[in-house]
Length: 438
Image (cartoon, rainbow, N blue to C red; front, side, top):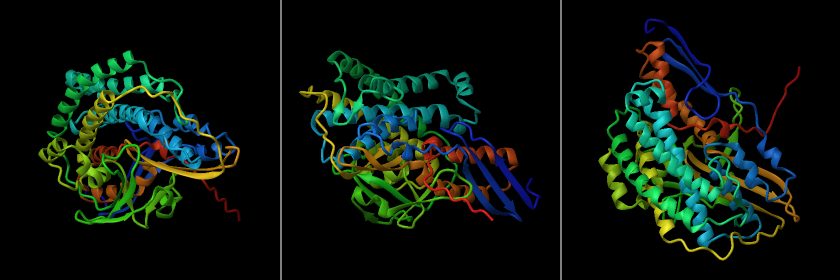
């Protein structure tokens, strides 16, 4: 309690996040001494697993990294391997890939908004309690999520770990009747997404303002999704872009390192603690949204820069609405391409790609031998990049709330972690192991 000089908050298993992690906070003499977001899932060795594989296998193997955002891994792997092979997929095949990615944004963001994060704002323990309190609200979320899942099933062959994606395009093109069905679903989804934005704007947002560098893609003519230029903004709200760099130079700017308390690597950008995800995308590319969506953000209290991570739920809601509208635009402009995929012959080389997974920037690099064998692979997921910033935010968050009892302080800390929609399973990769023996 507040009269104690020492407090130790320990959450052995974080609930309502993807994957398994824990939180440990130590307070001594009224000061937060340490904050550790521990990721204790076993190393998954995906990068090592890819070595020696055929160049067309990362598309399916990396999709297994995550059951919530497999498309992000597939799209990034496709683009990186195709980059190594000197092939660019464009036209209607690129549009179908973008449509598939829109489906993932809709289903992943909606899952997080309604089933994982909303109960926190409403003082409820979980989504089942929310369904008993407000059934119509949960039904709207499920209906919206189902629209995203349907896009993934039609384009990807199934909603979880899609199987229809290949280098150069797809194994099979969608039928006209399938796309007509998606168009009908999206008309309802658009109304649900508009209501979701309005609803999130009414939530009560705890006071927390963070000062991290922000890293997101900036595309030439669109809100970032399946490509763009990595752009790093400084910590202050009015800071200009510090650096924009080609995707091929990503590893010169974003450096990963091990920490003792986590099996996931942590990362810094140009030596700065940084965040990816909704706050970074809003800072970097809100001006790329249609003006009416920017107006919705302004009406919901978002400025040009949003530094309160609790308001990320509003940005996610706007991104869902944008993804629904983008999916509708792609469907209206669709004309069947002459073939489901373009040839991607192997060659020796190194390829890079970065896309915007729902929870932040995702980077892949592959080095190929002349016959297409994968020599090396590197995958930098968003949660690993966000981990250091989450710990720093918890330190400030707890310091301001030491008057709370342990149970309430723990509950609020878990909500603060869920602001970032951490995908802990994605974050778990492990490159180097050092054993010191006496």
